[in-house]
Amino acid sequence: MKNYFEELDKDIKEYFDILSGGEIPEFLIQYINTPEMQKQKGISVTCACYYTKMFKNINRWYSSLDHSVAVALIIWHFTKDKKQTLAGLFHDIATPCFKHCIDFLNGDYEKQESTEELTTEIIANSKEIMKLLEKDNIRLEEVDDYKIYPIADNDTPKLSADRLEYTFSNGLGVRDIVWNLEGIRKVYEDIEVQKDEDGIQELGFKNIELAEKFVHNMSILSMGYLSNKVKFSMQFLADVVKKLNEKNIITMEDLYELSEKDIIDKIEKSNDDNLVECFEKWRNAKELKESEQYIKDKYCLNIKAKMRYIVPLVRKDNEFVRINEISNSAKEEIENVLNYKTKKYAYLDFKL
Image (tube, rainbow, N blue to C red; front, side):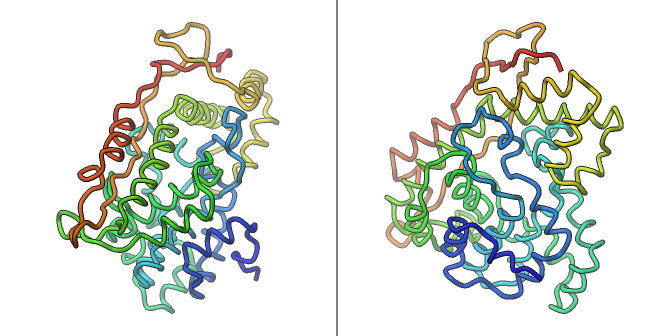
């Protein structure tokens, strides 16, 4: 059986080496090799943005599996706890093709959690995973909800392994370019487990300047997540999938069984000429048009989206405080994210 870590490209291998501190736990490899986890290799974390030319700085394929493994490595690095690490590994096991686009399809624009409901079912129905859990003397309910472990996941705007990972990888060319590997290393090595205002464990910084650097790069990415280009692309793919389903070209089950490449092949080979034409126009679009008024006879959207931002803790005189309480620059950048506005409508010149 192939070793997932040996197949990674050079940069991602070095990135994972940073996250793991050079220690990749052996038990993880068996779980990664299960069919349910391997299926995540065919899903991009960019929620459709990888497939259009609108995003000039997307220069790296990074799968839902890559993200899940990276989250697991962060959790292991800080906790050395097998149950928490596996909960992190499994947290996106129910992710369908095009990821949060399907939350848009389900009408879940602002929480983007609707696809998580199948997590327990997928793990429970996996003979391979359940056999491994039994061998490791771990119960299903100890790994099927990473929200029970605050280092793995917590409420916005706290810093968790999940948010830390996508802030690093998304800025490493997966969505934009705001980090290099050495910058990630410096920031990551400054992070420790701290206690928040309620005495709950949370990842935080030892050094104010590095916390400020993290917030600066996070803010660039956060405004990107809220951009019309991202929201438009996610809703467009959601509408395409809906039409494919209505025309019996794909089933909703296909989103959990096929890769994104398989679904795109079905789009391009469908007998719906208008759908194919619209899809190609979106794929080849380099710019998105925006307006404060609704534009008739165009594919024109007004969309809300989940606010993704982080206000990390930082150590100050042996206490842990939020960075925006002691840094004016961080406070200003976080407020810029919270006040970020796009034009009301975004559109392209077609009718889906």
